[in-house]
Image (cartoon, rainbow, N blue to C red):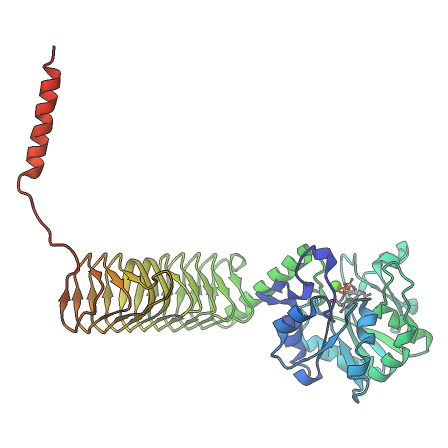
Length: 465
Ligand code: UD1
Ligand code: CA
């Protein structure tokens, strides 16, 4: 179920697209569902901002059912009748699209229990210290069978004290669900069709309704409010750190690090405090990622050092390279083995060959730079004329003197030198020296004469009566 708006978030974005652990809540739920059944047997109920939601999770091969008007969780299931009832599913597992911490093991336990109990409806329940806001499970005289689920707003003072809550995850006998679902009514404070009322409906029809409790109540937490959402995010990120620590990664002060769910890190890599590793970032073994670095969707080989304050997005770094401090690597930056990029170097869409270095204060954009190249401090590739982007090619072993501007399109030949402070507008052949600056002229005695002239002026002023 992913059709709701998420009114309590006060957001322009649909609830299930809010991110926790670096990806949409719904993407977590779908990924977990896919561990239980193949994508072709998963149906995502969408409604509020349906197209945006579909786009965000499409590609996984799941089916979509449109709930054009969102009239409650019961109604969400009603609209799936055409898509699902015809298929010969015995069991229908219902997941809440806004509860991303659920695990495949728990879904399987729910499903197995449902089968073992020969139940018509099995709900996953949990004991919460603070059950406020959740539906409460009403069991007849403490028995295993469930009589009803009462929503917070409809609960009596006595029922509100019940700590066993409905998690919003269920297993149904598919045929029975569609047979009885029309008995749901909207006679409740929200005027909605509650799926939770199926417990009472089926119980009254003398069908078996049971509940199985989670072993970890944290798994079923929903995300109705921003406060709940950041709690889920924190849980996911700490859990991610735990998985990485287990795999041999050192993370100092893990609660200061932001590591997305899909990030991979090799053993013996050290992650210092206040590091963010985002999206599909993949880091090799024996790397050190120093504080305040933000790395998104990048691939780092083994033994890479990322010094403090480095920003990196959509880049690839070869083994043993050293990046930072304060390097800004924009998408499409590719750095070869053992290469160096130093402080205040910005790159975009470049290839930097093996062992090449740009250690200080440079802008390198749309450039193909060979191996063993030395880029002096302050070098700029002028890649843009206000309309189009042009490419700079620097061949193997070239040496670019400090403070040079390379006006693209331009090529610096293999093994050539560009003199410091040159403005290079024409190609430089291999093994040449290019000087693109005015020749220095020296005026002998100029400074001395200037000082003497000033001293003379002062003397004249002071001698006036
Ligand atoms: C629901 C349960 C409550 C349970 C809680 C667990 C009902 C009536 N109540 O409450 O017993 O304790 O989950 O988290 O079911 N949705 C639709 N279409 C709709 C309405 C909702 O697809 O018309 C989707 C939402 O996008 C969401 C899910 O169903 O992913 C649950 O809806 P939500 O409004 O969050 O229900 P809760 O109030 O949390
Ligand atoms: Ca909810």
